[in-house]
Image: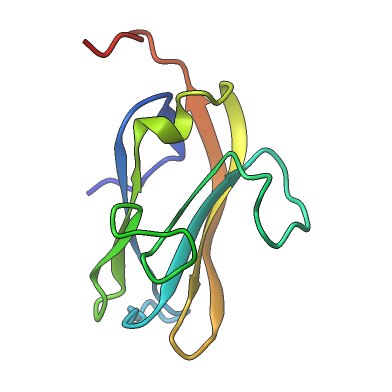
Length: 128
């Protein structure tokens, strides 16, 4: 499976697979963990992420659900982020900042990765 390059076409569905590993490359057990995927125009100090272009979260995190982020193999440290058309339909094209953050059941908090989220044009706009 190819690694996601951070590019996304406006209004499309996308599944972004991820694996959380420690510094030795060993998968971190995600049983009882929470996860957040956040896309913003700029970094800010708002702890509510109210300025985010959109967010996705696991069901056990505030505002989350299994159709947003799901741990597909918690023991193997694997999960998927699900982006749906409503997340990006009204966003302006261009570059944003994105990260995936995980809080383990122990309370330890990790930024799994941070990268550019590039929203590209969709040539076909109709859906019917």
